[in-house]
Amino acid sequence: MSADAPTPPTTNSPDSTDSTDPSAASDPSAPSAPSAPSGFVRLLRAQRVWDTELPDFAPATAPADPLPLFERWFAEAVAAGQAEPHTMSLATADAGGLPDVRTVMLHGADREGWHFASHAGSRKGRHLAARPYAALGFYWPAQGRQIRVRGPVTVAPPEVARADLHARSTGALASALVGRQSEVLDSYEELERVSDAAWDRARREPDASAPSWTVYVLDPDEVEFFQGDARRRHVRLTYRRTDGTWRRELLWP
Image (cartoon, rainbow, N blue to C red; front, side, top):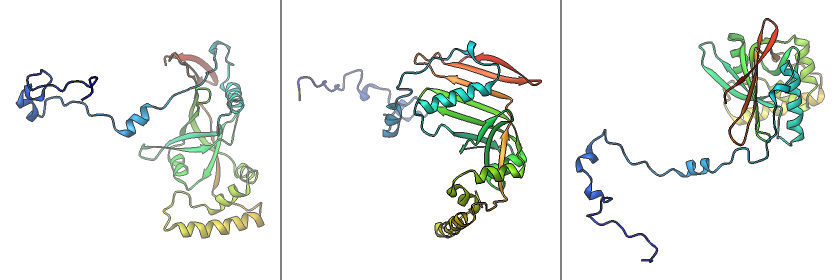
């Protein structure tokens, strides 16, 4: 045994298992010794958060309306090299109130609201038909920033959906022509066959129609801007709309 190695406890040591009350081992109410963390937990705890220099955010200088600040932060995320800053989490609830969330693409943001698109018959489309209210979440770790948006959702006119679809790539059109989003798929081979046919049609007919393609617009009641801080003094600035005007408030992190 190495001289540096600890000496194992003897049976007379207070740390020895023989010195404990034997009834404790059979007592289900007795606290058990914590188990060693699993490999997954060790890997999880080893991950770093915001391992970069974070920007400052002075909420007193924020504009009166959340849209200009969103546009500015989006441009800064792009400049910082944030991957896919136009993707966002979309949270909806079904007719029974059960929540769901997925990642979708932002198609625009303007005075009408935040725009995204999907098939009307998809799960999210069915949710929004039953409960036309949703929440969006943007996370840009390159700068330690989050933006949360929530409010009622409306359906844009069909001509807006057509223009949106045909302004995108051939692949996006082909995907829309496949349709049947969220339906049960019998086999991957069926998807390959239908997708190949949709790609062929998208190339032949770049103006082809996908009637179920729908543009949704979330008109926000509330928008929150979160700026992370290395000392955990995060800045949370929320905009809440009442009677058509925005009220700004700071929140505790």
